[in-house]
Image (tube, rainbow, N blue to C red; front, side, top):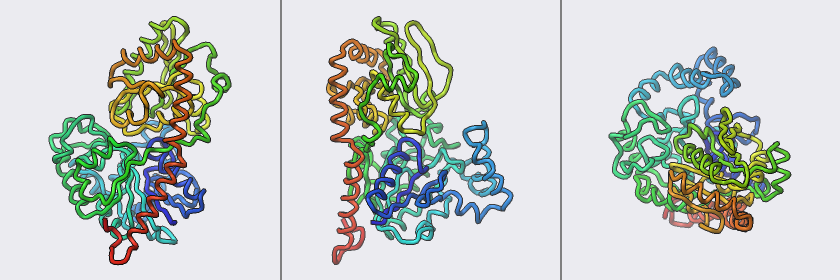
Length: 460
């Protein structure tokens, strides 16, 4: 098959990691696999950049040169991201400035309409992942209004990783139910992707009208998110919906020697180690670092059989030291082998969130044979078998989380048996090969049904 996927970045965490895994696995299996991205950072010939095609035509040469010159410094020098955002979004396209001031979501990306012109062969399947791009300098990369045309031209699968498609601006609604009826009077415009003014009702209606003319196949990693889809303005566009859990690469994330992992990372063999993995953990509004910190302090104060080291992987900062323990921050690691060592070095993986669809980090911890204590929010309860692979606690309840952690630290046989069960469940239910085969089988069914005599390409 010729499979074209669309994603914000070619590599990263969360949704980007899932899109990349599928892209790479498809081509390993001999399919013609292509990945169109909002911003490209490698020289992979099968990755198609969408962010610069229109820009190079519309922007004068000096501005393009300046943006290209700044690109390598993004993330290394403070203010570069804002400068590139200003150049690409407002200087290159003055209308975008006015739309942003009005709080309108940015769909001004003509590259989306020329997508098929960028490839030698027309794809059989179009598979879209996150279509918002708040972290990109331009604030986005895809024209959502192209979706009706694209879905008429080619069978279109969409994997939702958050609730942005269902709302007037936010990636997670954090308990607000206005998205069900039309948004407006938004209680928090700062939720990512943030907007300057409350145009959420207009944004919601624009999406509703786009979906009314679209015919798409929707996948979600959790039943929780599929339930949201069924209650949303996206529902009329859905030809078929399937819950397909995220997959974890068991060749990388697998049980291994704790001692060897700690030796490789320079961690104490005597300490009890807890791990929390999240990009920008302390400032990430969808995670709950405060609960992790409070849990760590309570465990350190109450657990007297060893020193407690908590590693927060995905953020930077000075080590926080307290009686009988510390919280240590480790920057995001691009090397998955290093990330796997951190899971393998830990006694218990802890995960606190305010909203989380189906976090890869929980799956990675399970696959490494580590019991998980996590907040019972959104799709997380679908990942953990209570009392077998880990424990679920109420959201924001540091006391309950600390109690479960202490229970595991105090009972080695329980910790070991849970870790063994966790790895077995991850291998059986959340393996990457299982996810890949499920999608490929679905693609085949979609293509088969679309070619039946007397039926158009999008018949139910």
